[in-house]
Length: 301
Length: 240
Ligand SMILES: Nc1ncnc2c1ncn2[C@@H]1O[C@H](COP(=O)(O)OP(=O)(O)OP(=O)(O)O)[C@@H](O)[C@H]1O
Ligand SMILES: [Mg+2]
Image (cartoon, rainbow over all chains, first blue to last red; front, top):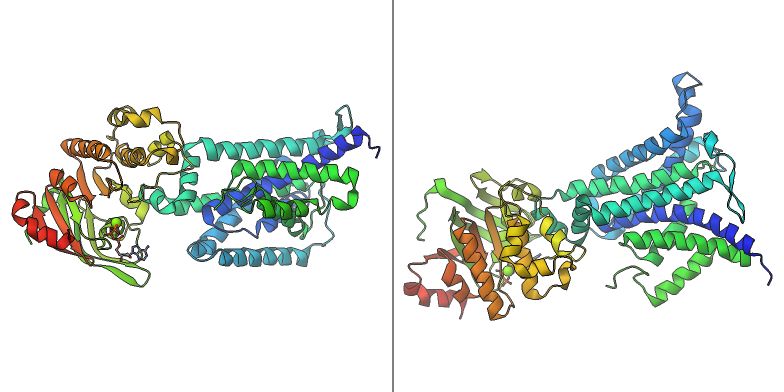
């Protein structure tokens, strides 16, 4: 087989770009699962909501307010999108999820799955399933960088760098700060943590906010790359669940590293045997489950 | 029951405390009190409800009823995390050292509930082993070191009422002695202590009063002075 290195490197870069999204999303899932004991099936829907927050803010806000020139810029969306999505998450956690922590995983999973269907259904009612383009990509992120081996779109590079920075910021928050030690303790032994005077129910709300805000952020960042559609989350979330299974629930660094590595793998496989690219993650998942059922970074039960 | 207490100086007063785990009714009206600076023990056979009593004080059981006054404040309606802020420190039976935290993070975990807790330096002076292991993962410590860590971490917070559950369980005699010394030191410093203990000899040496719990009720109270006269009675309760 004669494949130029250049092709491998370019696909690897695109793969890294996908991997950055996997990392952001699986990180949120892992944090939520650790602290709340909930497999958050609505994660894809929150990602979709983030993208729609950007789209609606840019294209529809002005129309709605009667002043066409009024637009929420991409930079504003980067901040407000996660906040809006996180706030919806807080409402969900406080009114519904909170009642389910003491019962089996299955109930949280069913609830969030139901919510995902509702969010998707509502947006499918008003928006085209095939998606709408987001036109708010900022001027300075247009064009491409010359990386030597390829011209790489500036925006995608921005997406990779931003996602990585946020991932490591979250890692730092959880592993190196006082608030993070509360989160780790609350994940490990909620009763003793509460008995020490730490408000664990509030930490859970905060964790859900953080987790879904990360999904919302991923959605905003995805908007200029992929078309914004009601189904964008459910397509992606299946892969992200595979990533989480491979990495193992409950490890922050595991979620980040696995997300990036699998994105890369997908990209590289695309060069060698394109039909395999969409399934390779699931093959890896099957192998990992046979070899280490708790995942690569998970603690064996 | 020999329980003549001046209610003004009470750090803890438990009255008619009932507690449930799900449908099982475990505590059937626990009554006891501890004055400021006193050390009392809760004695009883396995399964008598001593650990449950401490958990019920902290709001960690299921449904509970009755009254728990901590430092003059009613705690029965409070959520668990607020009870700690009344000045209660808990050393659980299973020690509950966090494996995701290193020794120093474990020490620093409980938020301060008053400003006059011990400093890290004082704590390390009291438990020098912990200083040497301060960067180790909490659960990598030996059983004795974990026990010291579990006690040390509630001293930083300024809690003045300590609920200590089986702190000598499964430890070698030298370590038990060391822990005994530190408990005596805490008492000398004016801490109020409730000690759940199987090791009666350990308890006899340091307590002001003993409460005997049976089937979720306090069935007897024996003060330190009455101890030798009541030895037979206690032995019968404890089945030794
Ligand atoms: N989480 C729980 N759910 C249901 N029942 C429990 C639970 N924890 C304890 N019990 C029951 O409550 C009763 C009292 O238990 P507790 O742990 O308070 O005993 P104890 O006096 O501390 O004795 P020991 O620690 O020596 O076993 C026991 O019958 C026990 O089986
Ligand atoms: Mg016990």
